[in-house]
Length: 289
Image (cartoon, helix red, strand yellow):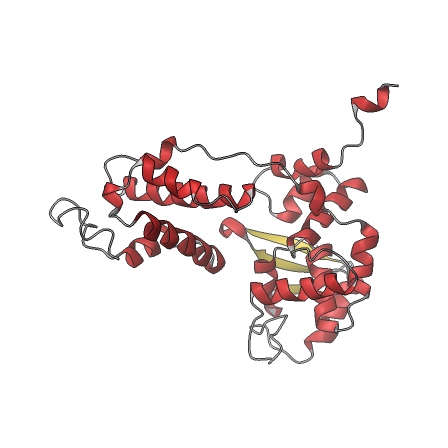
């Protein structure tokens, strides 16, 4: 399907004769590969559902598509809608569409289920120490102790790691939003990583695939966490649950919120404050009765 070629004649808009694949690539340019893949999947499914040129898509088409997603969770629906709104905003800014019909679509506000995704310190300790594969154990430790995203962990090279003068190590993380931050690696964990390294060069991945041929993918890291979790009876949390644990537990132990925000690479302290609301230290209910 070429949703652009039949939208407008080339003399009206220079992008009118571009294929949908070219449009999607322009829209997602500079985003991470995992983001590009997930956004493309959703956009292509949406365009296949409406089955008409972008210029002819109306509010009713979007609403019908939203209504076709009853089985999706609230968070998933929110993600899908935001992706489509982003695409329609992009095409409107390019002048391909006269109106941004996605602008009037309200994004649902799902229940904040963060509390349900925060494991206890004991659960994470058992999760890590029950893993017998050394590489996988270090993956779990890095996700938790350094609060890394799965995509950040999968792209780590040995050149990103360095030793500090205080006995600890540090990692330079290229994270979400093309932002770079430095995360301190606790001394004992840094030593374990160096034992794993052997004679690997700076350009080589910290965590190799099982075949030893290249970087682990995000999906592989998910599978490692899933298997480790099921082994001890946890409900198959994602790698991000370990990041949630890092934020929640460090705040519980008195870490300043701005430091936690900086370590995790959050865009603002407001994002980090969600962990305080998820596990409040005080509540008016305690003053009654």
